[in-house]
Image (cartoon, rainbow, N blue to C red; front, side, top):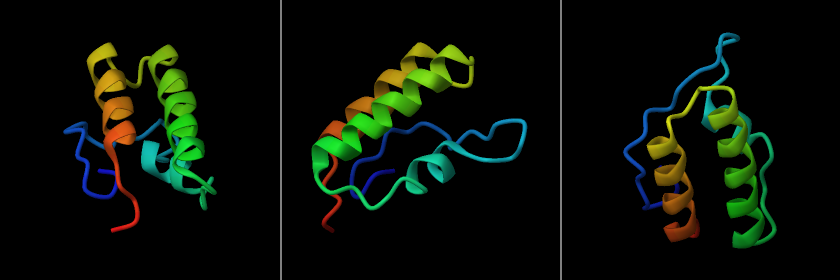
Length: 72
């Protein structure tokens, strides 16, 4: 979940116990929405390559990031 935008994707954890959201939010604060979306896309691409996301999960997370309004 990014603000009010829910991807419906579980917050999977790597073998070390760190989750997607753990790794994403450690990069905060994001100076602009574009920086946030870029960080989500980069991390989602990595998780897809490491088989931690399916293609569908990857695409839904990126779509949710694009639709997010983090000001709420």
